[in-house]
Length: 384
Image 1 (cartoon, rainbow, N blue to C red):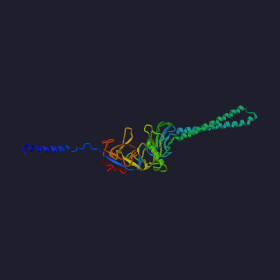
Image 2: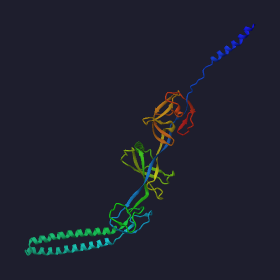
Image 3: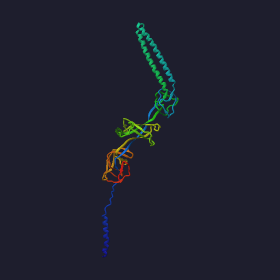
Image 4: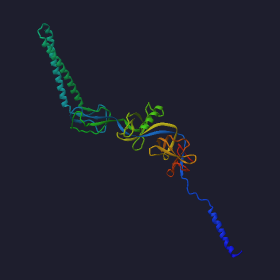
């Protein structure tokens, strides 16, 4: 073999190696996005609605004087309990007593006048038959008697009013409750039915809690109550309460009634619940959260909140993977949030695989690769 042939052998093998490299399959560059899914399965769930509420006094009495005069005594301690009929203030009774005595005298005078005229009329009745008294004089006397009797009635009414006014000098509480801050002190001049209350008494046991609920939830609540899905106590729905500090309230209340009107600005309905309040733990004006037990619902689908979004029209939607791992968009009816899940009544079926992670990397029509979901709840089963 000559020198020229030896030089051609390496070139031949180099070309073979280069050709072999060129025939290697191309590396796949577009990777399918990875998503986490949960497979839906029917389950039972105990539903409790959380409704914002505000406490209100069961009864409120704004105490105002019904007669004018000088306050000579205050008979209560601000913030203490007062009983129905208990004296709160004493208005100086002397002027009122004088008016009462005057009314008694006026009544006695009117009665004496009426009696005198009656005697005159009786005498004239006997004499008119013998024509010793003219008919005109007789009629005049009878008219005077009628007027005198009317004056007696007026005097009696004045006496009754004077008696009532003297009684009003002792200002009492019309209800059992807690007294507030007094707006007057001893020596203050008050007038009958003045604008400013002397003090406010509030009955706090039991106590009202006004709750706010959307119209949609309110209608559903009425249907569930009528169908017997919601447990009731003597025809009333029991309600639990969470205080502002996050602690549960020890007493259970009941739902009493709903406002027949809808708030046009918020589209909500006001519900009123009543709670025992023997310890005075709830005060008027406190904001609380009511827990309304709507009972257990069977064979429902619960979807993690991560798997539900809302479109521009405000409708709830979910992305699912079909059998070929293609992303599909579903419009659903998510009626209620329960914990970290949504109760779905339409748009999804048992066995559907709802995408709960990797949502930002996909869109409908794309194929995706399934990863096991880390969401493990009794109402959903992770795709393995």
